[in-house]
Image (tube, rainbow, N blue to C red; front, side, top):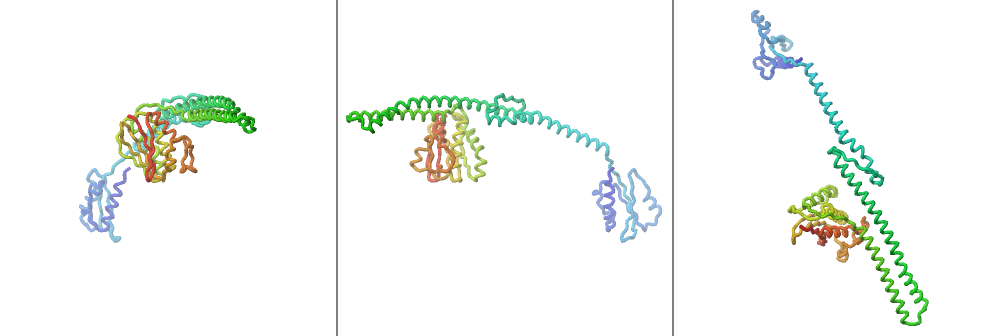
Length: 392
């Protein structure tokens, strides 16, 4: 039941008791009060008093005495209406709404359980098994669009790891065979060297021509051993650079966005400024993923060896090629070291105490060349820059 009219009556009574006249009260502020009448306590006309207390309409009526300084001054008659609210109906509608909301929430939870939680629960141990190399099964694909891409990626990762492991085993077998073969081949010239060296040491040759001949044989067999060592180094280098490049086409923006997305947060945490100058989104030839590996290696070097102030990426065209220039502030290498930075296993003096193996830039150059591109380095007064050259 709506009792708002009582509140309005009490408010009007308070105003009148404070001295406000009944006719001065703003009735539009009290929507439940339809009519307001005043009867003074000094009114002596009985007919007037009788009419005052008599119900004469379809509205409900309430008469309240008005006191001022504990003295009765008159009566106020309120003709009002009250809004009836169907409490039972409201309660029923509320319960039905809550039931519908609960049913919808339950449906959402069941849907998430079936299409999101269950698929991920089935593969929650898979990353650990893959890391240990124990997983030999097949990653079952899911129809759920939430889990499909994730499980598809896990399946591709598993296949890639399997292929890498098989290739690694094959390379290890080939390497052992090569080392055994070269070890055997090295023994022959090594024995010859030892034989001639002993003869010279013990002065077995009395003729000068025989001594010269022995020294010449030692030199020749030394060159033969050097050749075998070069073969070992060549084979080791070939294993390291067994990189598959899938040349196709991609837009420059894809590569730049990929780099910005990967390094925006790390650079923000280091309070380093990343500047990407405006560029034209041209179509390039090459392998997008391998190109990002090159950019990634250069960015990592900038984080390692830069001074932590700024990295700047700019793109421009030159001689029918797209050039991407990545510059970082910091101390540069010496002129002597600068000419060797793209050599394998080379580490400059500024890399002392920092992790690395001296292969990063060497691999970058090999990747760029396999994409028919090139990479160059530039020294500036306040930093280093690397230029990546992509063909159209």
